[in-house]
Amino acid sequence: MQKRPLGRTGLSIAPVVFGGNVFGWTADTKTSFDLLDAFFDAGYNAIDTADVYSSWVDGHKGGESEEIIGQWLKRGHVAREKVVIVTKVGFDSQGRKTGLSAKWIAEAAEASLKRLGTDYIDLYLAHKPDEDVPIEETLEAFARLKQQGKVRAIGCSNYEADQLQASLDAAKKNNLPRYDVVQPEYNLYTRDRFEGPLADLCIREEIGVISYYALAAGFLTGKYRSLKDTEGAARSYRVGDYLDDKGLKILAALDQVAAETGTTPATVAIAWVATRPGITAPIASATSLRQLESLIAAGKLQLTPAQMARLTEAGA
Image (cartoon, rainbow, N blue to C red):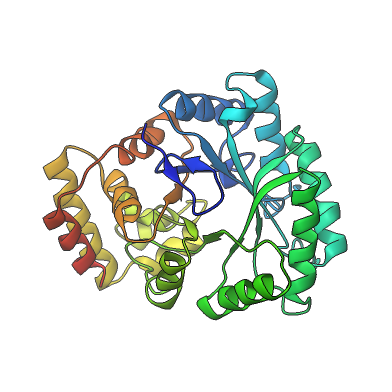
């Protein structure tokens, strides 16, 4: 599996990252282990998680996904140094503001390391901007973690271009490590959160990009074609947003390209993101080995320029 350099981090990752938000939510522990075993056996090497996954589930407090990944690592199916773990800090959880203060980052990092059962995090992300904490304080906290060997690289999620630029300026002015990776929402339907100023900045500054929602909460798999199809789905609250003329036009283009390539709409949708300018790798999730086949195929699918153009036009 051809790996891609992740910006200037020194890390290299395969062209699809497994989204660990499903671990302990829509994938139980055994299923999670089976999915990770198969994903890594296919040549992939990166997992995305966060300290708040899956706090939205009744009875959960957050950290369940990290705990399952830690248990999987302990089994030894894959050596720790072969795994790129991406986790995050600073997303409010269950009505409690956490944020990006130095104190909270230090505490949260220790808790994540404990749950993951490892002594370092490959890539640690600020989960969302925190307007109440000076960016310098946040970057200094991340710098300490890097100096201590607890974190290899840092980045941010859900930052807009001006917020990312401000963080880069602060890092340069104060001689602090910069955010070397960005994690925006990006897929065939939702493109304005990355394309334009943010993508241009990432390309110009050689910032790695691991995008999320590649399948638009499952809509781009093609299994939701009407509101009736969403009934009982775990992510039904999101899927309905895509059921409009634009969404159906995208599904038609995905169906066409999937038929031409002998794959699935999900595979094509992920491959489209992975091929777009500035993208290092999209994140995608699966809750069964059958679904996982689409993710694995996506990293190997070469779309033609004509197919890329057709898909891009459908989602314009």
